[in-house]
Image 1 (tube, rainbow, N blue to C red):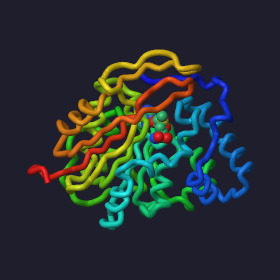
Image 2 (image 1 turned 90 degrees about the horizontal axis):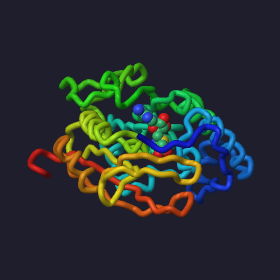
Image 3 (image 1 turned 60 degrees about the vertical axis):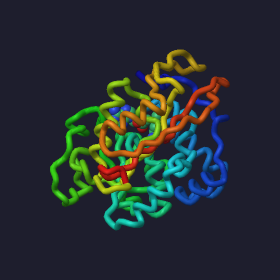
Length: 289
Ligand SMILES: C[S@@+](CC[C@H](N)C(=O)[O-])C[C@H]1O[C@@H](n2cnc3c(N)ncnc32)[C@H](O)[C@@H]1O
């Protein structure tokens, strides 16, 4: 259940456009300061990535929008990274690693950021996009299927306090109970109702039980939960969408969380109205503080 372009859908360069903050970020990250050259560089990498993974977010340049930094919990998540020297941040469904790179640019130590995606190629293209190498951007990446319990299980992890060696992680299960923040944008809606519910439990199990630890992100939602099905231009869509109330309940059933979700109206490529659900789940103590 998801939304589909096919990799032979023609790309539309008219959708490209960086706002001031994104322009500054991409210039700084890539070292390309001439705007037209930067545009050609981004379009070239976009085409390579779309051939591998024809996602809407790649088609529409969502990866250039610094989305993590626009989330209402972003600043408080960054503060957690400042407050605790060993705090770990995970970006789930990271694509190029654009959001991880933004968090690192804003102060989260690169070596304490882990990104994960089912497609290694997208992470590798992230190094092409940002003109970096594993040495110049020493953040961690682990490829895997977040729906596979051998990679990410919803069972609680062992109670050990020690951190695994992040440079030799083989599965996200080694991180259970150890993460301060998990960011997840435009990934949950790719999955069925049951898979989304199970992934919520698995992400909940990754978070440290320290009050304040947080999962946050955004994806397609609905005012009343159900299936969106239809055609939007070249894209076929079939996705299960939770509404804020049912989404919050998934988190509250998964552990001691304060869950907050709201919908933002979006206009799609063909003028169709959709909703982005912006959500967070913050660990509270069992007494609710
Ligand atoms: C729509 S993109 C969103 C990318 C990025 N988070 C953003 O907001 O720009 C979804 C990402 O999830 C990844 N993905 C899809 N299914 C996955 C799975 N089962 N496990 C891990 N990653 C997956 C895709 O490869 C893709 O990079």
